[in-house]
Amino acid sequence: MPAPTSPADLFRHSLRLLLDKDIPAWVALWAENGVMEFPFAPDGWPRRLEGKEAVAAYMRHYPGHIDLHDFPELRILQTTDPQTVVVEMRGAGRLVQSDAPFDMTYIAVVTVRDGHFTSYRDYWNPLAVQEPGADFTGSSR
Image (cartoon, rainbow, N blue to C red; front, side):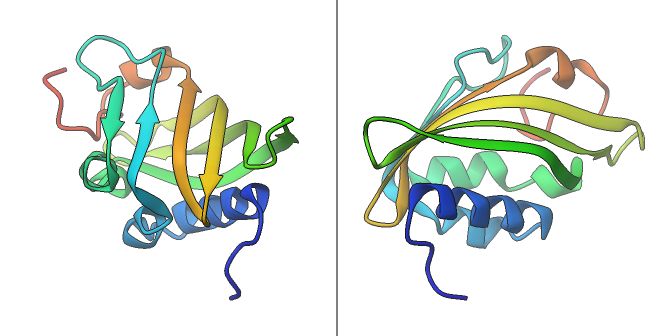
């Protein structure tokens, strides 16, 4: 597959990798000094990850807890900065531990430089992680 050429293409590619549960390839899309932020994260969850290694550590156990099946609603909106997009999406799947449905709505502001994520502000619903088996971060919750 040719390398994604735009922030929107890179983001779509990243979703495919998540559905394929290829976390190492997903992490490889990040710049070494990329920052991932979660402004609505509940207590006990990280609010800011600095650097590719921190993002990798955060995502390491994701597929063992959340089995994503689809992103049935996806809108990628261009901003006045050609390297930044705003994404509205819904992720659907199941929680591995309980087999309960997983349905999360997200809004993300994503910036790409030189073909890698440099900034990713993920505005997700903190109520969805109160379900048993949703905590893949290893936090004390």
